[in-house]
Image (cartoon, rainbow, N blue to C red; front, side, top):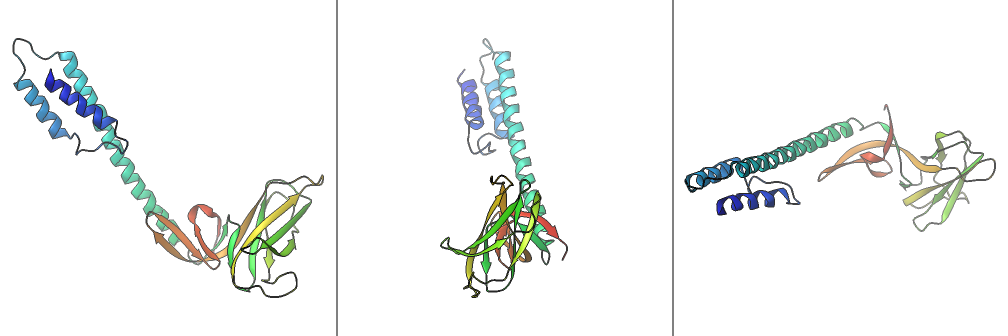
Length: 221
C-alpha cells in the first residue's frame, strides 16, 4: 500500500541519517497521525497486513529508542563539561605536572622533568629554543622508572639569560647497555586561571596554556 511505503521510507530515512535521529523527521504525533490515516483509508475488503503493521511499529520503536539515546548522550556530554569545569576551577593556585615538551621562559628558574618507562643509567635533559637549537643540557640525577624533575635557571650554556619566548624539553635516556629507555618530557608549574574556549577548558599557568588531558598530577597549593 502507498501509505505503508510512505511510512517505511520515512522511518528508513530517519534511521540512516548521519547526524542522528531528529523529531523533526518523524515524531510520535506524526507517526500516530499517519497510522490513523492509514487505517481510515485502508480498503475494508483488503485490510492492511497485520505483519506489516507490526513491522512498522517495531521500526518506529527502534527510531524512538535511538532518538532518546541521542538526547541522553547530549545530556551526559553537558554534565561531563560541567564536571570538567568544576575540576579545572579546583586546580587554580595548585602545582601541576604537565605532560608537554613546550613551555614559556622569561629568564627565571623553571622546573622541567622527564618520565622514564624503565630504569636508566644516563639521562640528559636538553632545553631547545623555538628553532630547535640546544641552549642548555642538564644531567639527570634520578634513573629509576617514574617521574623526575630538574631545575633550569633560565640561562644558556654560556651563562647568559635566554630571551623570553617558547622553549622545549627534549629527553635522552639510555640504559646500562646504551639502549634507549622510553621517556617523556614534563613541565611542572602553578595554575593561575581557567580559559573557557567553546566546549573545552584550558588551564592557564605560569609557563603557558594546557589542556586538562595533559595534567598528570596535581599537588596541593
